[in-house]
Length: 165
Ligand code: FEO
Image (cartoon, rainbow, N blue to C red):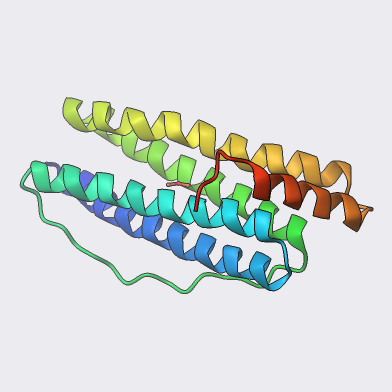
């Protein structure tokens, strides 16, 4: 595999694991503010990020490529309120989308067909990831002057069977 692409994929493993760290921190923040519904959804997101990292790891192993596990930074977790936390999650996902698109473009430019096809899954996944946080943010922004409504959203998230602990 092209060295630049391999380096990018190894760094993407790190970015996915950082994402898991970020969402574990965010889930903790929501638990500390007694918002168990948000905490549950965000913890589920953290688990998904570990799966994303594993997907890339397994791909590189299958291709007999060298795995490099870089140090994972501590996440920035100084959110001032629940909306601020969800906004930062959306900003983070937009950043991850950009990273994936750059890897996709590189694999296309150098005719690495298998990696291009492999990354298609991530391109589709990022649409879902951004949409998930955009939808949450829109709900919260609609009621941002009323804490009781945010608590109502939290209760609904807690009951939502889509998210299983
Ligand atoms: Fe794996 Fe949320 O990007």
